[in-house]
Image 1 (cartoon, one colour):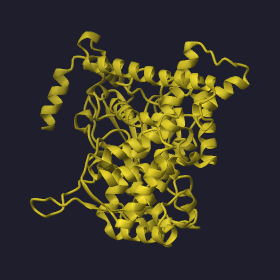
Image 2 (tube, rainbow, N blue to C red):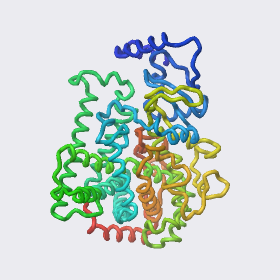
Image 3 (cartoon, helix red, strand yellow):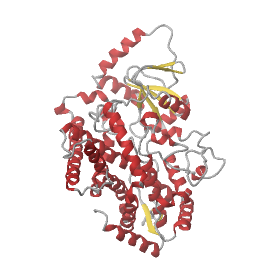
Image 4 (cartoon, rainbow, N blue to C red):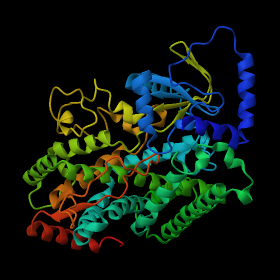
Length: 532
């Protein structure tokens, strides 16, 4: 099969001729003494190892190679060089201490115009647009966290519990919408766009993922003429519609600001208020300035969906598959909260909730490949030359399974965060574990490219995880025909850069009639405050 695939690659893609010529030139330039290089799998002429890099669950292949070749190895796909890292210290040396070299972003072939901006701050090259947007987003997120996101998380959680109680079969779509509603409320004061926000985020992730358009792996195909290029046609339409949607939201928010009815706890209000402080009382701007701001707020809105929805779904799965931990979480929540829904004020008193959430993200990482970095200039590490534009991947899936740091890494073990003796244990438990600081923060990236959303992840996952345990008993769904539990494949995912599990079935039941009444009371209490 491997030989057949190689034949197809050599004969079926004429665009590889350019790569062939480059390879021939490089062979002529080689000196008699070979340069030192990192270990890695055997490379085939021209194609490297592109023929056996799976488009789905690629992190499993990288883990397999790491077990053979060690914590840093290299590979190639066509003319793109990769260095794969599965050791925290090596990742820190390259991506943090040498962040001035390794903070570029590679070209995602099927996501147009992402490197120059202004649409995707996390995927831009480091330039003035990136610097301005990142600085603004950091300040806006910090201010919102200082107010713990103005109570929107608790209100939307009460709504979510009510919806799941009334229609538990739709918990998958309700979970993503829940994340989308919180972010859309913070961005524009329009939670009704939560579902659209979630769908837009999912489609964007598809276009930027190895598992998405084939043009992300067979990149020469992207250059086919536009009339016969369905991948480029789709992306041009998607990107244009997304920008138009963000710009429309921005302009509607500006109209509300001018009328005086845009809430001050929105990111749009914060931006318009900044314009006024600069002397722009009418808030009139050139179109490129509008696009800059609308994309900045729009992407902040979008990324807060995709980074949280997957972990919340995996948490529901983990609780259903590990009833012993579900019972421990419920006992802790009952002791602290009684008949009221948990809130952020309970954070210090619910370490078991936080441990199960932290372990969920380690066990089923939302970003198992890590977000790729690119060398911005030539470098040398451990005697090996690293060429400019080499892609560095700190593979989360493998890092989260290093035995010395994460014993029994393939299994769900929340006690690793709660009991002395485990390498990841930290005190005090009133603070640790969390998603803001401490152990295993690499899930949010490295160095100058660290994600700015740790605080919203910390608050939102905590309230969700505690509230679900307070309200419901979760279990695998029982097949009505066989009477047996319906299997849940914990590794079945959409394989995007940021994962969500594929739809799975759960039995979701209120823990008691009294608790069901409490959930409905909470649902009714917030209906008047939320735009549905």
